[in-house]
Length: 86
Length: 465
Image (cartoon, rainbow over all chains, first blue to last red):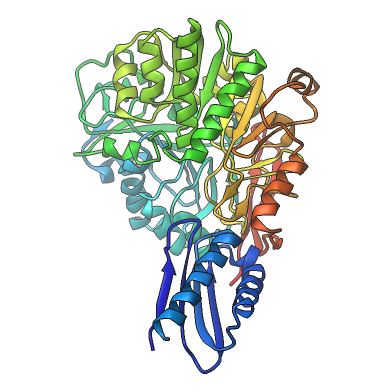
């Protein structure tokens, strides 16, 4: 089972890591924790749901990315995981 | 009294518990003197010290030791950068932290509120009588502006130098103010004084802000003969300084003076005849030091002559335009450059609130989003500079004029610049970032911000946990 990472740890970007898992586990580490943790958590769950992901281990290391950047990184990560794992 | 031994010199000073000592930041992050003196005072087991460093930089690790060993009672400064802020959170103070302004510190020393027993002043060269400068010697730092009121008013003034010469040209510090001289191998590293962010921004957002600021200044009608100007040493401010002097050149105008911390960009303008005089309280780079030494139109000034609100001859009283930064601003145009949004100290006024209050036009320049954090809060975490001193906020996505400036609003009625209310500007930021959850700074009060006039302002907190 392959782990996929998408993105960077540059300011205003995020690094999304995703791998197959027996349940849904989400870890979010963000520089804007106090102000936006729940907002980012909701966005990640919603995006996973849109792609029908119910089981995966997802790590988001966020350096202050805006929603569209987080969503794009996560979407690409999901696509690559599916491509890699058939 | 001249000595090569700090111990002999301290025997002369007769330090005691509770002594009030001052230090200065003209060497910024290249300063060796504060650590040298503090280590010796701590080795003598002194406690309850009252400290008045004009600015604290990452190099000042001895202050962290002093916090750990609980040796500081009250601490009064204008600016804190680096790990000292975290140490304040961890160890606290028995007394109070007071964050002053550059002008307010000078005022408080002259008026006796900052009562200093011993001023320890690093100078790059002095003569045997104590005439001193920052412009000669092996380790030049340029202007000693922030140390002058201390030298005059402290009960004892001690110079610390690595160069003693027979004569000093145009001394910045006079021998009559000086009680002792310590001659050491090295007072600091002049490369450390340029350790800040002293290059022009390459960030396209920053350059957009700079271009819009120049357009705003042009449309305001203030770029005219004998305009005066100050800007900081941040990347966007430097871009504006450069573009401002280019605009003067295009228009065939010359400015009357630039004030504040001086960089090579200010010096270039002086050398091209685009500004008549520079008034220099602190040199930010080696070009500024060279110019202050060589160019008679580049003048040294003390902190009081720069920004003391009770000094009628202060230079910034006649300032047309000041360009300043912000960590946060709010819907009332208050500006915070002292803490981040969690309350941790990240800087301090320096000359921010002095110049904002005095200049005819004070402009805040900043990206609308810092990472994901919107610049504009409902209320800033702490007020460094009150909104009544702030005229305009310029971001890459819009410009807000303080509603109290009816004249500017009228003048910009038909502008094509992206003018909007500060509420609309905040909404624009929220559309991109989302609305941040507000978590007010809390914990035990560790001190206060003090206005340049001496009034107690917002509290500063020591975070719990």
